Structures are given as C-alpha cells and as structure tokens.
Image 1: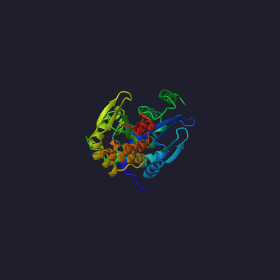
Image 2 (image 1 turned 60 degrees about the vertical axis):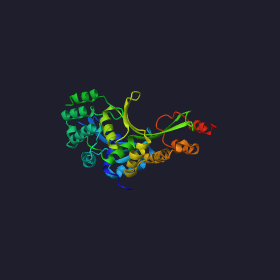
Image 3 (image 1 turned 30 degrees about the vertical axis):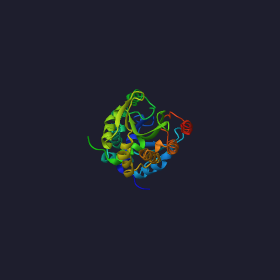
Image 4 (image 1 turned 90 degrees about the horizontal axis):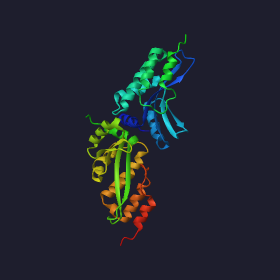
Amino acid sequence: MEKLNPWYVTGLVEGEGTFAVSFSLRRRLTVGIETRPSFSISQNEANLELLKRVHAYFGCGAIRYSRADRTYKYEVRSVRDIMKRIIPHFRRYPLQGAKARDFEKFARICEMVHRNLHLNRRHLREIIEIAYSMNPAGKRRHRKGDLLRVLGEDKG
Amino acid sequence: MEKLNPWYVTGLVEGEGTFAVSFSLRRRLTVGIETRPSFSISQNEANLELLKRVHAYFGCGAIRYSRADRTYKYEVRSVRDIMKRIIPHFRRYPLQGAKARDFEKFARICEMVHRNLHLNRRHLREIIEIAYSMNPAGKRRHRKGDLLRVLGEDKG
C-alpha cells in the first residue's frame, strides 16, 4: 500500500473531511456535559481502499460502516491521537479553503480539552460557543441554549 | 495568490471534481449528435477564492455562477485545453480513488474527440458506450438507447 502524498490528503479533506465537536448530557460528570471532538471522512464502498490508505497515513483512528448511510467512515475520536497526529498534519499542510476556519476552531477546542478545560463550567461554555459557530456537520442532538442552561444549573 | 500544490489539487478533485461527457442532438451535424466533454469543480460561495486558485493553477476554463444550485462552478470545456492542461496534470499526479476510473474513460474519450473520431458513427457509438459506463454526473438529458437509435438512422 503506497503512502498517500500529504498534500493529496489535505486536498481530499478539504472536500470530504469533517471536523466536528458534539456534546452529550452526562449526569455523572460534574459539568453535566461530555465534549466529544472527532475528525472523519465518509466515503461509499468504491473508496474503501482509499479510506484504508488514509487510515494508514494518519496511523490512528478506525474505519466503521454506517448501515444508515451505506457509507464507510474513517474516524479519529481520541483527543490524544487528534493532538499528536491530526492537528500537526494540518499545521504543516494547511487547508486552503473555507474548511481552514473550522479546523482552527476544532484545533482550539481540542487543545482546551487536552488541558482538561472542558471539565470547568466557564471554559466549557466557551467551548460550546466555539463549537456552535462551526459549520454544522449533520444534525445537532442538542440546541446550544439547552446546553448552556445545563451549565447554568446550580449542581451544589 | 499562492500557487496550489499539485497533489492538493488532485486530492480536492478526488472528492469535488467531475469528469463528464454529455451529448446533444444536432440535426446539422452529419452524425446528428454533438459530444461535449467537461471537467468541473462546484463549490459554494465560501470557496470562491479557492476556485479562483484552481482556475489559476490550470490556466484555462472559466468560473460560472449557477443560480439554480447557488454554487460556483469552475469548468473546462475546450477539448484542446483539456488535452493540454487537464489530462497531463492527472497523468503526473494521479487520482488515488474510484474517480481514477472515470478519469481514464474521460481521457480516452477526449483523445478520440481530439482526433475527430466523434464525427464518425462507428467511433461515436463507442464514445457513447464509454460515457454511459462512467459515474453519472447529474441527470442525463438523453437515454443511451435514444442516442444509439439516432446513430442507427440512415441519413443518406
């Protein structure tokens, strides 16, 4: 399997990649909300081989099949892997189009999560504001106002 | 305007580019059918700057606005430009995914058109067969059978 050219990977991601940050309500967490960044590329079966080469290129993440969309998705959810492998790639071979703005917001959030700031109400509020200013990747499970309300609740 | 990296362009086209061959009925042509190859990339307004850089990279074609789709389309229709600028790029920096198969069919057709073989019924039949084996780019105006029937008519 020949290694993909780094600039080819960036070009592919410009069109096909998704930088997303989603949130889940988690009562057991002090802040009540889990922050979940992910980087992904979805393709139909004809490009499964290509996805495997992208997977090999980044050396992290996994490929999953989505029965609902009938697509294969290469996805990296580990913040450690995102910090170590994904973000450095796009710093060195930057996106050239509108997606660069989403990447910058995504990178900022991942850096905050990496420093555990998402476990702090004030910083989590900032993370939510940044995330909801990104291009929506599919449907949001929660409205921004609902998340901010959860944060506003006194958990004492 | 900084020149785009050639491999970035190939990666972008892997996801966002279209190699298409369409046909129009033209009574004035001896074969009755016009063959129109085109290479294009459509993007929304947020990526208009990027399209301009792709335009500058290839040094041919034009950008048009499609009111229907609210998108901008960079398109190359001139077979001379396709032969001189587009095909050589993808020979040197090849597509890595399923689109490579479409490109090969597209290149084969453009080479035939360049040699004026599309003005010959037998060769045009072959061109139509190849074109209709490519991934459909949008709706086809004519069914393959209808085109082949036009070719079959005795125009004597």
